[in-house]
Length: 210
Image (cartoon, rainbow, N blue to C red; front, side):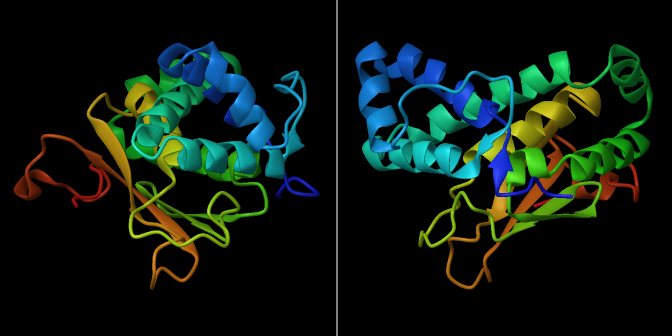
């Protein structure tokens, strides 16, 4: 069930602003907030309109054409850290870390799907399998055209969660973005276990090879 009225978790904003300040300087924060039409950061106690996060992410991409991937990736990693520390109970974290990669990924992907509206807003999330996710109509790239994937923040969130709870070798990247020609408005994310050769892959216990 998606948040009514297109709302999203405040960490899409709250984790990005400190990264901008640390990497670009405090003077860059105000202009980016202004460009995104925000009076300031959200309080962090409730969901926020998805448009606030979308406009800030787009403002960062527009203002920082070279550094935006690193900024959004770091913000996504910090969002994953926040979720791990504040939204997943310690017993659940322990159980997932004790399981083999396949069962852990299955359980984690189900939990992500149940809470997808917190990061997808009005986008339609689908877990294709335990290692592959799709977001149709992703508001973060709606109406945009790009030759390259844009959803670095989402990929970093998924990677951070999988690295911590499934295997530290998990890597996630967006293999197709809704902003790319021919993608049909669907963003697709694939997770793999780095360093594993194709011949070593076993069904149900390893990530996608790409």
